[in-house]
Length: 148
Image (cartoon, rainbow, N blue to C red; front, side):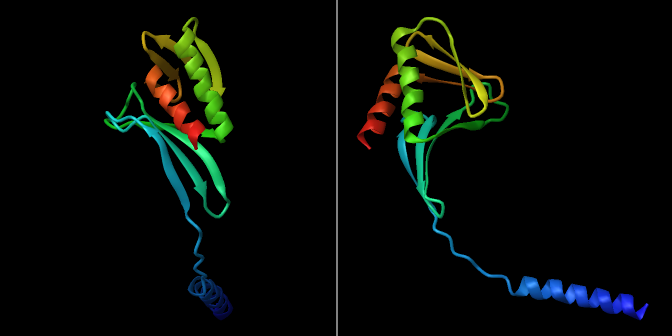
């Protein structure tokens, strides 16, 4: 019985010693810059994240889910690189300019349906909700992406 108690005491003291000798590591923070945001509501918003320990460089489009389940149901699409982001918005611009039939594409492991409705480009996804952008929004985003 004494051996069990001594063994437990030794193990617990080793665990406590490891926790007391923990190292604090200072990491380089990731920075961000807003490429574009809706002046009316602040969402949708395209943000560029860069820097940090792993030298990140990716783009994220935040949007307010129109099929919201909560009062503020903010979701996002991870667009990854600048090239992917420009390709995504060029596709939306093509839909805005030409209209026509619904386009289906996969991004971020979700199937997105895109269709033009009057002056709006409507995007919807079963898993990620829906939102819309105006043709003017899309043109501003592309202009900002190409200028940076």
